[in-house]
Image (cartoon, rainbow, N blue to C red; front, side, top):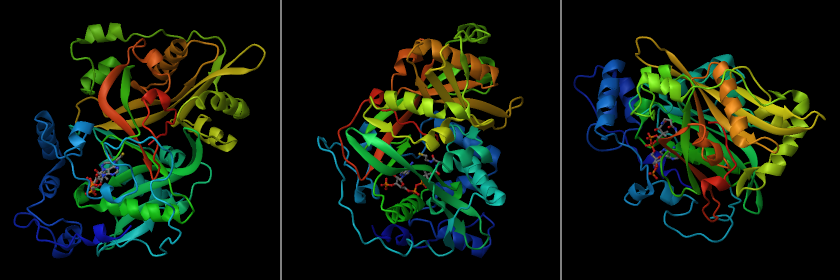
Amino acid sequence: MTDTDSLEKAPTDGESGGLKKSKKKQKRENAWRPEGPRDPFAMLDSLPEKEQQEIQKALHLFSLGTSLPKTLQQAKNHTYRFWDTQPVTKLGDHITTHGPVEEVDASIRNEPCLLPQGFSWDTVDLSSPFVLGELCHLLNENYMEEDDNTIRFNFSPEYLLWALQPPNWLLQWNLGVRVDANKKLVGFIAAVPADVHIYETKKGLVQVKFLCVHKKLRLKRMTPVLIRELTRRVNQQGIYQAVYAAGTVLPTPISSCSQWHRPLNPRKLMEVNYPGLKQNMNLQRALKFNRLPEVTKIKGLRPMTKEDTPRILSILEKNLSNFHLSPLLSLQEVEHWFLPKENVNDTYVLEADNGTLTDMVSFYAVSSRVLNHPVHTSLRAAYLLYAVCNVTKMADLMQDTLVLAKAKGFDVFCALDVMDNMSFLEKLKFTISDKSVHYYLYNWKCPLMSPDKVSLVFPN
Ligand SMILES: CC(C)(COP(=O)(O)OP(=O)(O)OC[C@H]1O[C@@H](n2cnc3c(N)ncnc32)[C@H](O)[C@@H]1OP(=O)(O)O)[C@@H](O)C(=O)NCCC(=O)NCCS
């Protein structure tokens, strides 16, 4: 890897005129600016939030937003200036073998990748409540939004600690970029360690998460620099593979699945114009169609306790090994990912009369802010992690899970069509959204797999 990506962005005279910025501030922002005509994003960002949203809504309506390919077809016409330099398989390659794309380079550089002048690397220390608050702020203002920018993620500090600090997490893998002048956090990417099974190979790798660049620094090629520096820091620990998921098509998805939604509070979802709702339904019909029982029906279903951890590990081990891409969990990881934490995650287990655990289901919680709505300010979504059934039917366990999630105040339940999830999705009135989730492996080649062969689900 070289630093050319970070060096190729010589400051240019991008925008001027009406925008009253200090020369210093202008210079700072120009450091990431590519050469060429006026940056439309900078112009958009200079407008008040409300006007930005109106424009984004209009762009969305006419599908004119600048974005990366969302389909393989679109990807064929895209030039991947950065990804074409990386050890990933090329789009269209037919892979039949298993192994690294590139052999290990033992000489890992000691110096960090170069950043443009005015920016510095920061190891984001989440043990400081202040720094954790800064990360929340960056992500909540800039992380994925619905296309029309009316619903935004609202990650809580507890959620981020859970997602970013599983057993053996490393401080230096929480990587930030700050503006020298005011120390503002404007870029972030993280890796957490994980062991996975890829076909027959057991691999220690990292899961890459929470890639985020401040809106005002978009399209200025900060992402390649973040990825290169994180790669260097991961390589320093002797790890050369990564797994990550994204909504856009990059070289090359190992599997592509879809996000499905199940309304729990259809009235609110309709009022906030939640994407992907059935358009042909009026409110009365939607309420009736999505009605759920008041109480659960499976006898013995109860929240997980710490003592359940070893038995949950054994249920998961037996079940998840049937897939081509699956996690290899330790006892500590099972406790971390599944033991219920208020407003973060929930796990329910089914205990038989003789005390054995047979089934389990687990989901996590992500809140969003609803912007500029006269009534609603927030939305709560539950995301399925794992549902494993040995005794009950999957659809019965999931129906009870929907009842429990609704009782806990969630507005919508989301699940991917990975594993055996298709066995209940349509039956329980989930609808497929237009959001794909593509899985990628860094520096590992293997044959592609269908979503029902994937059992690696990780919160992002
Ligand atoms: C994703 C995000 C960081 C990309 O930033 P950007 O300013 O659009 O892109 P940059 O100019 O910095 O870099 C462009 C390069 O990054 C790559 N890239 C963009 N998004 C990527 C992603 N999610 N994962 C990996 N690479 C990505 C592009 O493909 C491009 O490389 P290429 O020339 O090989 O095609 C930014 O849009 C963002 O913060 N979005 C909100 C959060 C989000 O959606 N994160 C991704 C979660 S998967």
